[in-house]
Image 1 (tube, helix red, strand yellow):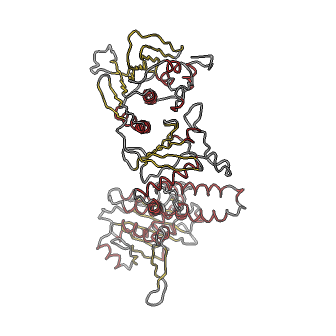
Image 2: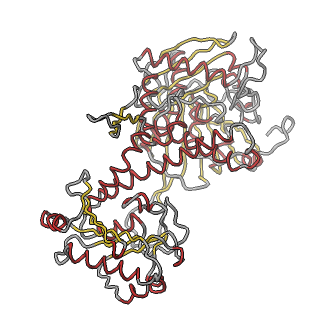
Image 3: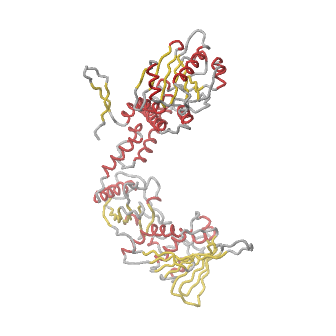
Length: 623
């Protein structure tokens, strides 16, 4: 290196470079060839066969040995040789070059050999480039990247797609100058594919002005073969992709359609970073609102670009306002409890993005409420009310998902365990269970906070008579809201009978449940506690007749069978018989009113023929 200008070594330069892929090296080499006015570029991946001493290895193993880039450009004429030896050369600064690209070669390869015209250059990490005269004049430039520092595997299909995407912006600029380039990729001497620079879609261009600065956007709209991407150009080459910009600088592209655009402007040319030329010296946001004619920010560029892209969409008969409304409706349907936080969708986000953003806003409000310093602020009560309503709504919405899960449980061989675990996991003895971690509301909403399920050990300690007389061929759960005997006021007893077990009859189940209630009450000398029992049977018309004959009350549901119940004052218990599907439909009926409210429907009271206002009707709002 020319140490008179920059006191650095090749080794230091290469070491400071970030880790790179072989494709980045390839992009750099091909770009250099294009800038040298090459019309044909051949890239050869050269392999060698590994030698093995073992005779049992039948297949030859090949590894990449080198990459050769051959082009018919202007070659290493004198100015290019001088520039090659100069760190951060300004030789091709008007083309947007950084002057350090060739050092990428040595990041991944131990040695670089270059032959061009009548010169040969050896480029290695531990000494300055050496130029010697080549006896055999060639009219091409050949760059050999030798001895990879790590294993390189080539997926040629991915490589072809990546090359097309990476160079499409460059190809458009070439097309504007009526230039053509052909890139041929070889595996050894076998051609794998060819990419032609003129084989690109037709770009449409629009001009617009920000303050006094003119911009040109060239774009391809809704081409499924192209990425949804933007390229910012300076000096007739791409400087930065939109996806590579910092979050505060990039424009958020719409997901409802694809647009690939190039943005050019003298303003971008003047504000490209002069040292690396890999970014722009443009502020994310406005610094001075009074600067009406001078500098502009990414915020102003993106505001104008968003309007331009919306206009392009309209020209292509895409109604973004309609899409925004539809996506909002979809988001509310998917997460109705987040309705307030979802907002109006002015950014035209899809439903998933809207829900994600709404959850973020909810979490921010929760964080605000947890901060004690905010308790006296004016907005505290408003946020408290909103968060409380939202969490309640989320709970009701989650209940719907539990109901849908229960309705899907139809396998008679596993339904006992599945249903048991759905309302509360078997063998649960954790005091930390909350109203969100159990689903006893499936039976009755009054049990929503009952979170203590008794283990065999606890049953033996608190209800010894029950333990001594307990015959448990099926799944039995005894649940309360406390483990302290003197504080127990209510007990829920749930017996899950195998639906295909013919020996179980309503009379047998009823007798068993009454015994359970009696044994529980034996342990309370001066009072009776309320006992709510639920027995699951596979219903039949015969069973229904038995319930009716014994005076059981009926609660109709949307399922085939109603729920049957009867009170027994002697043991202060109510016995409920439920078919496996009835439970889900009964819970659904109770939850339906809440869901209608959450999904944007209003509940109106209607008068019946006697003038009573006890009938509810749901009405959907106007969209």
